[in-house]
Length: 247
Image (cartoon, rainbow, N blue to C red; front, side, top):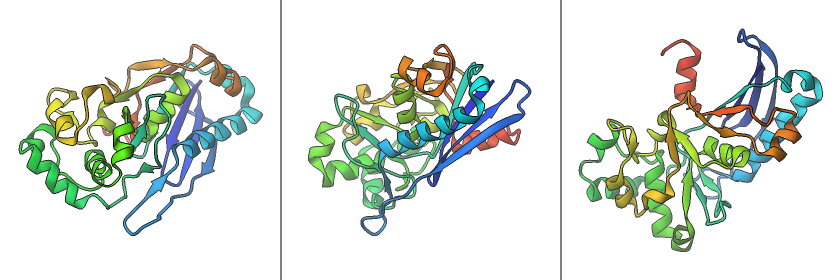
């Protein structure tokens, strides 16, 4: 058995599939988006975790035996979101989502600071990406920026809560403007242009690699074996491409 977890903007979806990729069961829990100002789009990372836990526990109520046979867990999710964590890995502020448009001026500033940014990242700087959001926080919420010790993408915050591992994978990392896409590693020049050290980034994996196993308390609550492997996974665009066979 395999468990898939997708963190969308409008909800968390979990799906249980067997070894032949046949869907055994699925569950969804909705999420709300906060828009406190024009162009803003935010969510509380703790709500992601509560919704994920609620969805898997609901699945367990119907499929306890099947969940007890899970060997691997895959993650996908909304890309580009900036989840700022403090030294204890607690969220500092609501996550700034992919569809947040506040950081337009910061895009120009980022490309001014690092003129090679398009060659390094393979992308134009746009407000939806993660790096400009951090420049916005540095300019408008300097206390929050000063407290930031780690930045994770949304699905990778779920991974942290599930496994204790700060990890990401190439497809989601490519949407941050911090990945050197040719070298397949974090770009220190792009991080420096954002005012962040390399230590603020999670460890990078390929999507098919193992990134860890569940915390014992999570495995017990979900009825999943503690040695079930949590794979790197993918951002939602990459996961969708693989899902329709574009590999």
